[in-house]
Amino acid sequence: MKFEETYLNDNILDALYDMRFDDMTPIQERCIPEILDGYDVLGVAQTGTGKTAAYLLPILSMLDDGGFPRDAINCVVMSPTRELAQQIDQAMQGFGYYLDGVSSVAVYGGNDGGRYEQELRGMRLGADVLIATPGRLLSHLKVGNLDLSRCSFFVLDEADRMLDMGFIDDIMKIVQQLPQSCQRIMFSATMPPKIRELAVTLLHDPVEIKIAVSKPAEKIHQQAYVCYDPQKLKIINHIFKQGDLQRVIIFSGKKEKVKEITRSLKQMHINCDQMHSDLSQQERDEVMYRFKAGQTDVLVATDIVARGIDIDDIRIVINYDVPHDAEDYVHRIGRTARADRDGEAITFVSEADIYRFQQIEHFLGKEVEKIPLPEGLGEAPVYTKREKKRSNTRRHGRWHSKGDGKNSQAKPQGGQTEGKKKHRHRAKKGGDNSAPKGGSAPNV
Image (cartoon, one colour):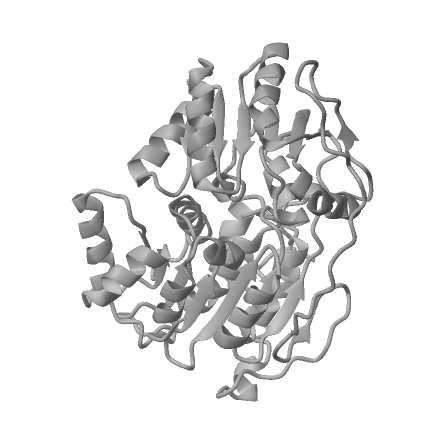
């Protein structure tokens, strides 16, 4: 489906035309009409499928159409990390190029006083779109720097990361400041029980849209070492002795482990750096600059880097521990083999992680090649089949599912009229009503 076939307004379509975007991605095709029609939306899709455009385009289109207070924050977009907030802000600038009456401000911590004053000025002037991390936004709310009582749109992006990073209490405090009439949109790459519970609390009679997780690129050569934890650093040392160290990311799920790995690598005289949530914004920017510029060979990172950070020439991704689910595995190893390059993904599978890795293999539809331990490292755990424990998890709430090709009729959001939900049939632009052929949808 093409963007021209929606009823996004002409200013948005002109920006997409200039950016050479023509066809929508599946998540955009399903979400944009629902958001334009006023429904709360729960979108489940992995990073790189175009989720940012799926919510920004319809919201910007409606804001540009008018009817919203000029002196109020009309839209809040919540991001789990400063890096993702910056990328959303950049996307906002591109999509909103022709929207003279729609303004935005990005609000995130780890900056100097000048940045804080800029945020404060933007909020007091009534920026239409506020893009923020939870901690910084909550601090502004506590001191009375902004009022969300007239907000019309609330977006929670990367909701699963929000929960993983411990932001749930901050999010709920922010949501309490929103009016009941606010249209709410929530995106997550995964759907664990806690995310579904959050959606029940946050959303009003939502349309649920699921996009299947893509398999890793064929160009990624996937391998695994079955090993004990004390053997992992020795395996890394062996790998690095075999070839070029440059352009390597080592992922671990815990920031304390990232710090420990970094210390050990530096003792091996490996040119490395670390990326995790304890770093200030300036420190994070410097780390990413050095890595992108080739000044650092190895980046040790938590999953903060697995989503939303574009680095095209990563040669090797090493999973120091097995990710919690297949989606996280895909996100991690997807940092390599980008832009038609080849790449390598190596996972360390400890005895406790065997069942979890078998679940990932089940998702992949194949067994990942197991590499024998380097000589002299001793025996490895036996890679045996393990039975899954039965779960008593119950689902809550009612959902209008729009995923997996099964569509059901959605109902109007509480407190809104049918009139607001009807499509606004827009006139096609002059000429042949066509957009440039061959343009790909924005994967942001």
